[in-house]
Amino acid sequence: MIEFRAVTKRFPDGTTAVDRLDLVAGAGRITVFVGPSGCGKTTSLRMVNRMIEPTSGSILVDGTDIASRDPAQLRRGIGYVIQQSGLFPHRTIVDNVATVPMLLGWNKRRARARAVELMELVGLTPELAKRYPAQLSGGQQQRVGVARALAADPPVLLMDEPFSAVDPVVRTSLQDELLRLQSELGKTVVFVTHDIDEAVKLGDKVAVFRTGGVLAQYDEPGVLLSRPADGFVDSFVGRDRGYRGLSFVSSDGLPIGEVVTVRVGQPGPAEVWTLVVDEERRPLGWFDGRSAGGGPVDADDLVPGGSLYDTGSGSLRAALDAALSSPSGRGVAVDDEGRVLGSIGADDVLRALADARRAGAAV
Figure 1 (cartoon, rainbow, N blue to C red):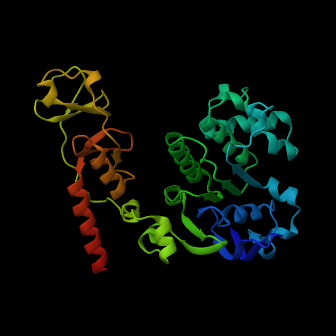
Figure 2: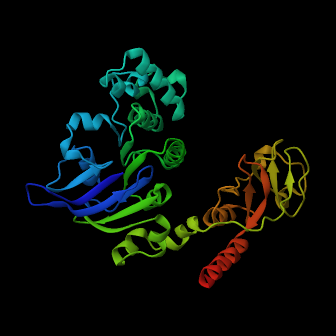
């Protein structure tokens, strides 16, 4: 647990970066700091490992005031991930990851063995171990940065906009990887971002800061979206917060309709969209029988199907997005192994939302 008690940071030029921050980041949870540039979110993060010292107030980690700890010793027990990964360019990947264990006195063999384990944990193949950072993609470098931060198994992980420098597809992959790792490791994570979508996706709780370092609202993502504390939070979260809020409405009970499927090489029904699947009933794309006149399905004629709706972990937002992004107007519902179960339409989702609202009103 990380506790901020009336923490203020005022710089010599008189600028107040953080103003009397009171906040508790729960143990084993992801707490996200979000807000516009200059709102004090990164300053607040960097005060936890004493890279910046507070002007007043106190910060406690697991009940101990960090001011009583030696800064170097404190930092070795806190993982830290930044933009651009911050890797040592002259060290191999395995030695980059092994840095902190070796500083803690581990021998090289043990530290490198731990590094290889962590590379696998974050989705990096063993053959990358002897490469240098410049030989890796941006996404791979960020994964190395996460592995290095986890190398000494710290209870606390600080992440300062770690995914902002990569492209959207890689960023989504890294976000999913962080959630997977957190489900396995249960670290106390403080994550800084300027992206409200990233904050809502990752955070167990989200702290919204306003300019001047003032905490505007600290809540679970669903509460933040449905009940913003004031006009500033409402504006920052965005006008499409209602759509984002569907991420926190369960899709349990959403009816799954039938869907016509066919394999490549088989004749596709004329005048209708047909879902093309592989031998394991995993979707490959859609086939427009209206343009093919009922001829056999050719792999070159497939139309991408948009997003998929995973019934095991889905939300109404995922279901609606699958329906809206599908060329056929029907989203593809899949099981946890990606096999087709059926389809859903936007009207189905809207009816389920109306039912959920009526149930909430009744309660």
